Length: 211
Length: 202
Image 1 (tube, rainbow over the protein chains, first blue to last red):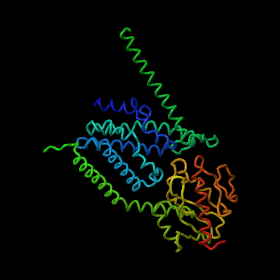
Image 2 (image 1 turned 45 degrees about the vertical axis):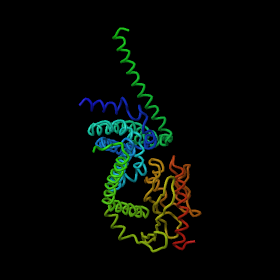
Image 3 (image 1 turned 30 degrees about the vertical axis):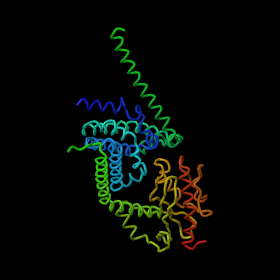
Image 4 (image 1 turned 180 degrees about the vertical axis):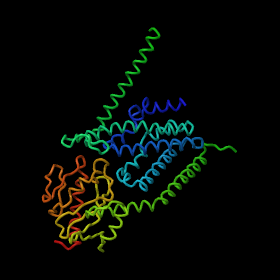
């Protein structure tokens, strides 16, 4: 069970796909000015990562090496299209709001990254878990970024007004460039905290060994 | 004979089978849901037409019913023209399609009988940037057009704040989505003459 816990911790924090591996940046910049869209998009990514990891892992022993990546892309796009079809049939309003972004889940580097790095060499269930937690790690960062962008840009959170209308909204927060600033600040703070911890633990171990 | 996973034959056969399998499932799923998707699109269009006319509804069923009983489709060439009679006034709406920033924007534009004022506007489909141009779907943006006077065959979607007047032929653009806002302006400018021609107004 500890293996699962370790994967969870790695994907969510220690090796977070967005702020440590710097993957999936394109969508991080594009969809994070509105919490509702961000949440739906990240749920989509999480499901696709988990299921494509499961599938690729299940068939890993029959995939020829030469067409490994083509097969991965095939499986990933398969699930993305399923998500798109389901949204269009059962949640037409959400599908309308997200527009082209559902299709663009295919290009999210995290999904293929997990398929290549993990699912290719591990058993199905644990691969599913790895994909799922990687998706959650992605969701964590995007929701935080979207929270600040929506709050400062529109004065709302999930469409509910927090900052009164009389306070001028910070228009730049709505536009894509602001995501660079928010994400960079986020990485700065988080990495700073992570480094401090490493320094502390390594310093502790050196003093303990008496050097 | 053991299978050589790296042989050319195996690779080709594997690729063909796997691709066939996945595409087969997808097309099955697509056929299975296509009726529902079509129905959803139909409802979107009917709702957009009702919204443009300013007819209110609560549920999808009510919208369908209201559309059947109150809206009549006029037979014109090349365009989809609808008509309702509200408080003794004839109102007309045309289904429009024009280019936005990323793709086509389709919707409904309703005007009064002599094409002097916009009655309402609503969108059926658009693929503008979510959170920026996609905000044309928001109520405040569409609300601005209601009752706005048409001048020189159009109205101006202004990037600077404009007064709340219905007679200045100006509405506010969306911050951060100037190009989408201007596309709407262009679409209206294209369709006002079309409406004038269809309704025989000079």
